[in-house]
Length: 291
Image (cartoon, rainbow, N blue to C red; front, side, top):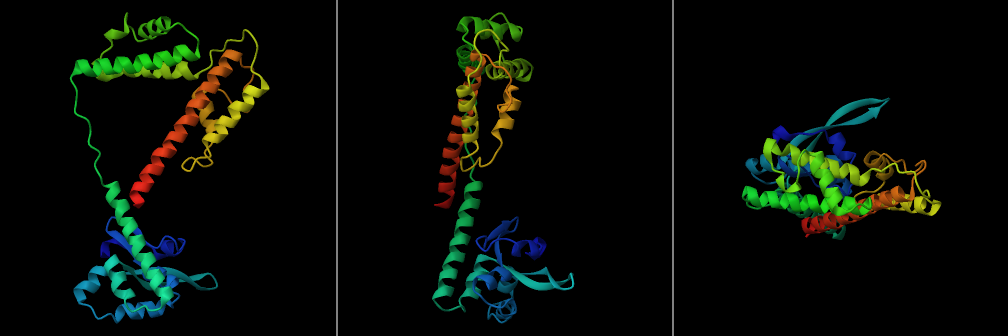
């Protein structure tokens, strides 16, 4: 543990809820956090650690010396000793703390250690990759994905599907989409994906017909604002992301045709669904880690 000493000043700055931390050497708490939680003078906790009737080997393995800085007046600072405690070290030390309040804190510390252990275990899990498929099977899957994206583009731009597929094939230098392969490290396939992403999300610039209504622009802003309200997307600026994606500033969009505002609403709806699904997935992962 001697190689893993951190600045205790950083640890003390953490809220008391963060009573267990981790680094490359494992889980730990500190004598400073223990003193604060159990409402003891830090010097008394240090004395208790020094007086523990345990073997030298146990003490060295579970109580690592550290230092922290504290002000001593007039802006001056000084280093003071402290300890980092493993779960076993904390458990051994806490045996000497009695009373209902102390018992509650013992339970909280051990729950924190256990939760951290589960989190680390979950992070270390390996996700098995599906087996590699033959090239012809992979090619057919890629074509099916591209056709799905072509269908979406044809929908938002109100194009005949056959016209949209032919346009993509010509863009990547082919006569037919079926001829696309992973040659040249899949560069042609990447060009196809990039093109479909661009044409599906960018306005056409068509100015014919009626323009966007105030109601449609209000809906667009509400949808983008909602994207930044989920648990894992709080306060993110999706208006800025939307502008990078589409080239349209939702606050000052300029004139948009009815066709293009419908296309922008489809993109905003996609983002809203995506942020919702990410939240569902992350909530499930968080629940698994905490159980």
